[in-house]
Length: 292
Image (cartoon, rainbow, N blue to C red; front, side, top):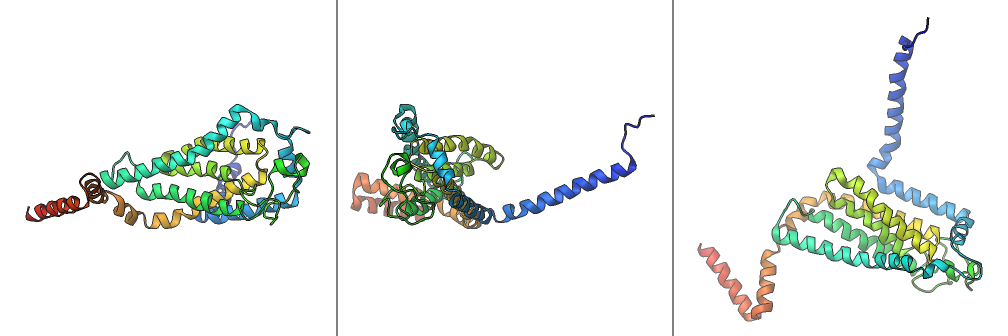
């Protein structure tokens, strides 16, 4: 006789194993859920250590796009140049769009089709702190020569490790990648989407971000470690800024929503009528409001 069902013993074991797996999964994910920025910082340390211990990874990755005697021929590809130019233009367009959204909230007040001001400021702060701040400081401090400039690929500079201070480059150097940082910062735009759509938006934004970043390696402008470090720095900043901006979200939103109508009206009066008439017009308007 063939028994196709589970014995009582097996029936008792399977839920226990499932519960144990769920428990282990919860314990492993608990640090990420509680302090993702700390987990990402440890990942940054680990990744940096691996690139320092195994420098041939950087050389092999860049060497994949290099041709002996020609350097990095993809740097002249018109399609890739257009992708690079798009990546350079996007941060400016994004900043202008976000400022216009913030202006809309300041004048129209809370609207369902407009993201909350504290989330708009979160994205702007990521670009300011991570891209213009930390990564820009590294680029002008570490002095790492770009792949196209080192001896291994036809240049005259020495190869240096990530986080190694060097005088091979004086400004706008290879470590870390500013364009990879701005590409990664696009993922912060997912914060503007409704909660249920944020993960999907982040995945959709990750594809062009990866293309923009790999493009810089193909050009011989950055090593793989330059890109990875920039990605992780930006990710750390995204999560680190979450706590203060969430904590004061109501205060930030209240200070913006509909609070800019008066100042904007006064500014328009000042531009169209002149300072004296604008002040008298604003004073007359406030007097009529007090009488009514």
